[in-house]
Amino acid sequence: MTFARMPNGRLTWSFRLTAAAKKDLGSLVNVSMPQAFVSGYEINPPYGPHTRPSTYDFRSSIKGYQRKGKSGRAATSPSRPMTRSASSG
Image (cartoon, rainbow, N blue to C red; front, side):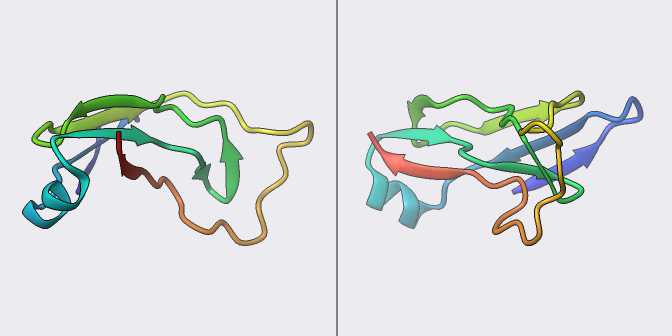
């Protein structure tokens, strides 16, 4: 997985599945980001679920975001900041 912070403040990321992951997941995968955190605050995930070939270069970016919840309180212990999960489709 690669991350880059652009001069305008945008965060970009990209990842490719390993050969082992492709074998386990098959030729098509569903990718989603069920949770995302910025500075300990849960935000609305910027990456919607979609299906792609397992050879795809999965990538996206974020600049603006919206905190979840009424108060936007910081999470006490986010389990995985900016995570994605891949599952077979």
